[in-house]
Image 1: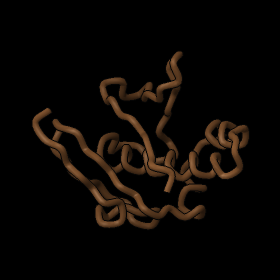
Image 2: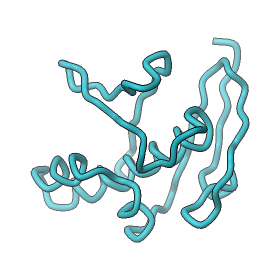
Image 3: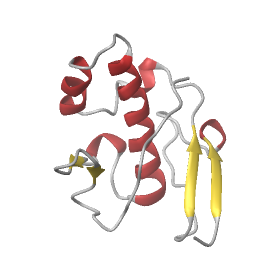
Length: 117
């Protein structure tokens, strides 16, 4: 890995009211940090399948956390990697092992993790 880039969510210029593109180097690892995500922002971009998955999660609150961070993933993908799609249009599938991947951009490899607050 040649480089590691950190991005702070609120300072990269994205938001539900701010369309645009964030240009990033093609190689290296990009680490995005989103300290606060409001429900009004993530409700607009998650899919029905993601909502259904979240509804089945325990303990209480885990589903909302899943939706918040899936929303961030969709926004980052749309602004930085899949620049031709809006966040809500990105198709995210699950492999047999449960790892998310992108049927329309299988060359992109990503992971989503969080530190529970």
